[in-house]
Amino acid sequence: MSDQVPEEITALPPSLRRDRVLETIRTRDFASVSDLAAAFGVSEVTIRSDLEALAGDGHIRRVRGGAIHRATVTREPSYEQSADTFTAEKERIGAAAAALIESGQTIILDAGSTTAAVARAIARRADLRDVHVFTNGLRIALELERAIPARVGVIVTGGTLRPTQHSLVNPLGTVILDQIHAHLAFVGCDGIDAEAGVTDTSVADAEITRLMLRAGRRRIVVADGSKVGQVSLVHLCGLDEVDLLVTDASADAASVAGLRGRALETLVAE
Image: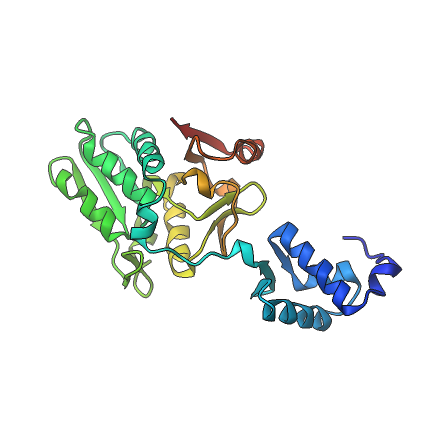
C-alpha cells in the first residue's frame, strides 16, 4: 500500500470510516488491523475500536490480527448434515478420486463427508489390492471395513474424538503422521479460492489436515462445487501446496478458471 494517505480519507468521520472499513472487509473477506490502519491513515488502536464496534453490530467477526466478514463465517455442520448435502456430487467426486489410486499404494484420507465418498469408491474397486489407508475419520474406517483384509488395510491415527465430525484430533492426534510417507493424500475443505487458498471451519481439524498434506507425495483436495470460490475461517494451505483439486460440474466456472489460472490442476467429475 502507498504511504501517501489522501487527506479526505484521514478526515473521515468515524461512522463513515467504519462503513468503508466494513466494505473493505466485505470485499477482501479478511483484512488485517495493520493494513486497515495504513489504508485509512489512523492508528491501529482506532482501527481496533472500529472493528469492535462493527463486531458488536454483528457485521464482522474479530479474528487474530484483523477481522473477517460475517458472510464468510459459517457454523460448522455436523458430519450427518454435510453427508446429506450434494450427495450425488460427492459420489461422483469420490469415484473420480478413487480412480487415481493404484494397487500397492499407501494413501491418507482425512475425516469428512466427501472423503467418505472416496472411501466408498475405494471399497467398490474390486481390482485394488494391497492398499493401505491412514485416516483420522471413524466414518472413513467404517466405510472401508467391507474391503478389509482382502484388499485394503486401514490404520486409524488415534487422538481425541470430535463427536460432531467423528474425527480424531489433538492431543495425540498428530503423533503417527510425522512417520508416514504416503503416495496420495486426499483431504476435504470448506473453501478453496484463487486468492485465499484452501480453508476450513475447524481449527482442530485443520491442524491434522495440514500434517496429512505434508505426509503425501501427491496432495489432492476433494470439494463439491459449493466449496469452490468460497473462503472459510481457518487457512489450511496455499494453492502451491496442492497438486490437484477434484470437484464437480456444479462448481462456479469462473472460480474454477481462477484456480486453473493459478496453475492448480483441476479435475471436474461428471
